[in-house]
Length: 116
Image 1 (spheres, rainbow, N blue to C red):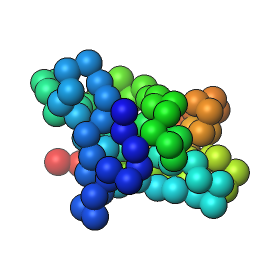
Image 2: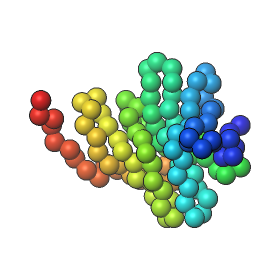
Image 3: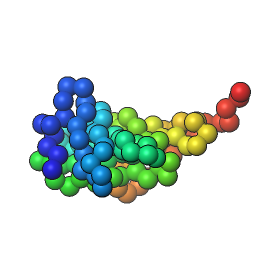
Image 4: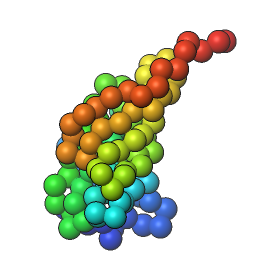
């Protein structure tokens, strides 16, 4: 079980997953003690999703389902709305949002095609 106290000064902690090879990165906590963070799966294929957990370490869940594992840097409002960076296979990144309870996903921006 992950307790928030296990997340070190660098923002890293082990997270529960199927093979024990993941980290919690950059936790964001609002005034209601709701915690959102980037869960980073280190095994291949590597993946980053937005996860949440309760302050006592219970209730771990993956909120985003980016498909290609390119969700990162969550910011959580007191209302429970979470805003984060989301990318796709073209390496173009947008801003997405989801609620702390996992409802209400939406992509807020639409970045154009990359000019090479």
